[in-house]
Length: 397
Image 1 (cartoon, rainbow, N blue to C red):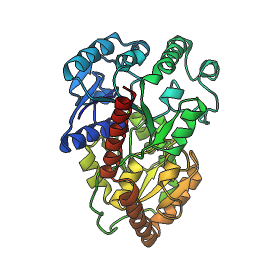
Image 2: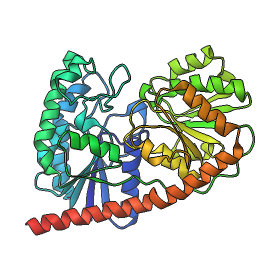
Image 3: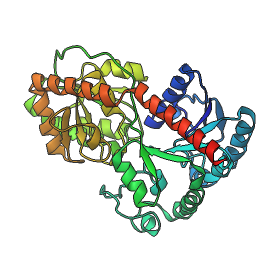
Image 4: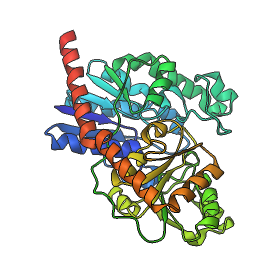
């Protein structure tokens, strides 16, 4: 089977990009000719790993490319004509490639895998500037609530309308969590099928030892809640002065967060690694007694949570979005309310003071991960979906 994977970016720095790159590799290992089309934009300067590129940008002109990217249209038209895929699998495409690519897919079997709220929210988070969840549909509320400045609001409203007009080109729409399915269906995007994302099998980490370590992995951006984690960890040190915090990742908030750590007087207990390759990240996190996912927004899935569970690490996660579905409170970890510094500190103290409980949650999490979040199982499901779409098109023809 010839499969063309499409995503806005192809650098191995974000969840959608890592998932797309992994899917390409797994499909190739199963004998498929899988190729990757993406923009040339490089978030954080990372290397792009796509097979085909079109022009993209991270400059102030990005809003225009999100709305109509003529280079994406021309490049994709050429790729479709030369590669001649049996099926096209689209993930993120509304932050670089734009809906301009959708008319090209009209005659092809196509799958849309939604990995965040972008099809129903122009900023993709469904979160208001004050940190509260947005309960409005996209439209005038996006400007009225100051989510978008006027210069961006007009083009992005056009983009959203263009996407919704052409979304019928997709034979199937899949998501990774029940919470994201609800958001899409509330905006009349249906039918939606849930296909949980899988993570690679990983050996069980060694028994917990040494000073207790809290781990975090993710981009250093506001919605990931790292500020909340730092403030909570300062409280943790009052009760567990031997504790350490390992922060893996990079992003635009790093300088501000490092300054906050200095203000909180916790610098000597925090290690900043910057972005690390996936395997190295997992190796460093193997020493963690608990991994924290303190997201302020309702993560549609939260890839780092099942990765931690596969490794056998207890997880403390925000009780929202897909994280609330992946992490089982009191069984594989602990739920906390988004933004609750005191609640997060209390949860960390509980596990850092009780090694047996951290081990118990970690082992239970690994059982759940092996049963529900294996990468091989996820690829099996995707392959089955491809066959169903192709058979449906053949039957319709």
